[in-house]
Length: 280
Ligand SMILES: CC(C)(COP(=O)(O)OP(=O)(O)OC[C@H]1O[C@@H](n2cnc3c(N)ncnc32)[C@H](O)[C@@H]1OP(=O)(O)O)[C@@H](O)C(=O)NCCC(=O)NCCS
Image 1 (cartoon, rainbow, N blue to C red):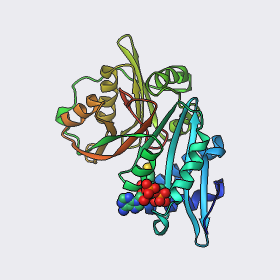
Image 2: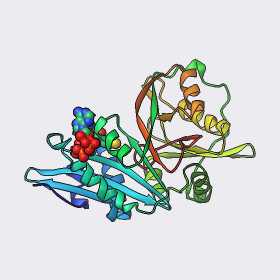
Image 3: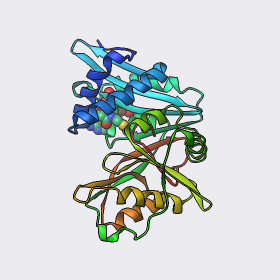
Image 4: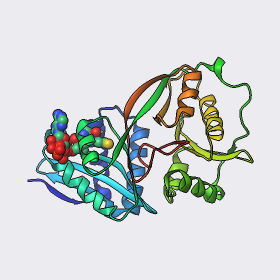
């Protein structure tokens, strides 16, 4: 007997642990904290979009979704391994999708899991393969001069909102507060074009949005140049439409590999744009 019910803050610990197992990746304590902070933020802004399931063994699964203007977005979705493939994912996703009823657009950064693919396709999403480029940055290939990016602040919100509406049809709204608390915000604002990017501790662009490919490329160069010399680096969440990002990765000798999909409903792959894995 599995019950589906609204998810609450008390579920965060068990949900993070279940997610770590089902996504099969070891997570640092810092990553776990970021996951709980981000998911707790979405529980607060969109309680109607977040659903959990229980059985006798405890938390059986969850789906965390949220609305930003007329976009519906799915941040995270998992079912405990022993229950997968038996229809619980459908129940959780249907509850989350109902939160987005009437939304014009939908976005999900999807794993490569065939069960997730079936669910999203059945819900009317188009699945666009995405690339991740990884490896050691060939620092000899970095450009001699970088564009004059500046550090972003809360005063840049209108600029960020305008860019996001152009690229994905909706702002990130309150999600900027979580992103800004976990990342460095850089802004490039010049006559030739405008853009912004959030960079994590490793210098990876975890969200990048710009008016044009030249500006997007300049922001990504700043990100790559800020990476640590002897650490692995990643340019993630690159759809084929964003070849400007593929070209930066290839220039510094990163290796491309396909990794999951950007699942979209009601919009084409945003470009130039590198989406965030959870906040899209
Ligand atoms: C993705 C996930 C949440 C879906 O939950 P679920 O309970 O497994 O989903 P459902 O059982 O409702 O649906 C799974 C679908 O895949 C099918 N399926 C099950 N096993 C399969 C297999 N080995 N090969 C192909 N299809 C399979 C099922 O028949 C069902 O399709 P249908 O409804 O068209 O018949 C769950 O599988 C999961 O946690 N996966 C690991 C984490 C993950 O990748 N999450 C998605 C993040 S984007």
